[in-house]
Image 1: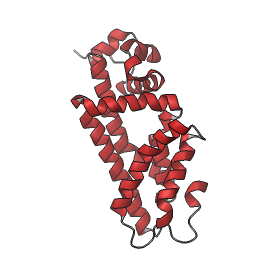
Image 2: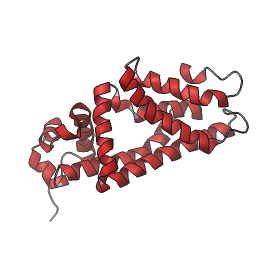
Image 3: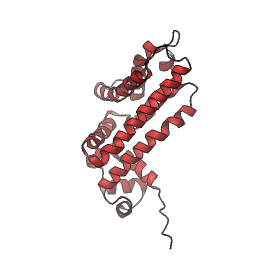
Image 4: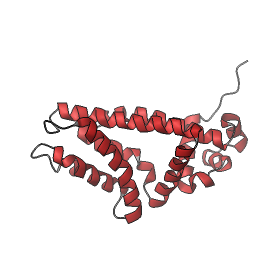
Length: 205
């Protein structure tokens, strides 16, 4: 006999968990808090995920899936590969739009680095982001958006590094928005590789 319908998809619960994570961090996140966010009882989450650890593992796995799926959607929304790249790195960090939320998500990343159950999906998300960056830069190079001779693989590594580092610097300095800081730092990294006349494109997009 078929079981009762779930009512609320796991994806909805995991989005709620990410929202709670941003507000209170991994230490403050509880099954009860996530259940309240989606209008369920904690027992439902226990049935779905088993424990807080199971919920965090599912959240990490969902993040890896999102890292694979998001680039294609963002690319469809923009005319050029470099415009898509700028939008993509902003979207990746969109949930960390205050220093406090950034700190709470950073605390979750610190757990990813020490918990074997969380590390593998975190590494998968990292690799998916690197592939997306390199794919967009390769497309930009082929379209003449980057200078001849640009080392696309090396540039992709630099772009990924500034994406992570810019958030931390912004959270410390607290000037402007995170999106503005990300676009500024991306422009600084790409500027030497842009053809003449294209130097202002990224910060204006």
